[in-house]
Length: 221
Figure 1 (spheres, one colour):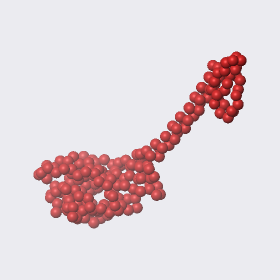
Figure 2 (figure 1 turned 90 degrees about the horizontal axis):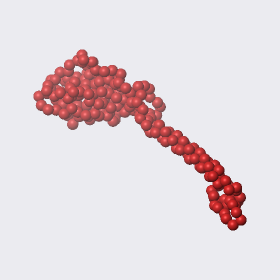
Figure 3 (figure 1 turned 90 degrees about the vertical axis):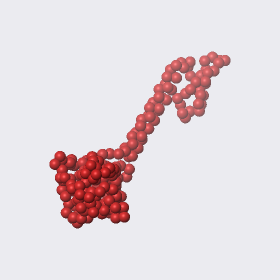
Figure 4 (figure 1 turned 30 degrees about the vertical axis):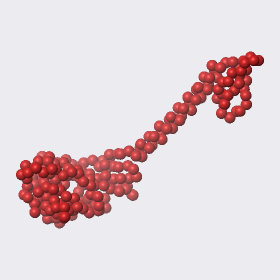
């Protein structure tokens, strides 16, 4: 919108006006610098407000879609849980006598999975000679991860404690679980709670000690 300012009977200049509603023609004084200054200030203020609103909206989106790492173990109603086992062994295979790749990380993707060396027997395969063909079972129940040793040759351990075969034992988040081999089949257990789009990761509650019980390197059956 433009307002016509009368400077002389024969000359008219079109200048911007700050009014958004008026449609009439205003006859202003020739002080154009003052009018332009007011308009520029008004435009700058509106731009600043829009930028601040955009920043708030962007921050809220980032907050809702971000990842938060928490040490709390509490869970909320409606949240789903993920249990992830990450390898932490040194990968030494000298006790086996031939080169063996250290198994990678895996997730307990269903309510119950079996662990073992033989693909025909186990859901999660650890191709290590010291792991039994059918070594152990992992179950998710009521927010807990439970492990059962299935009478394996070299045993299943939570940290330094060897489990009794057939005994269902909870695995605390942050602990270390060993399937018969401390070099190639020891895993750190992590619990992740997925709530809406936020993932809460639990920090480890224990660290392996230098006095970790040695596990037999006897070939498993």
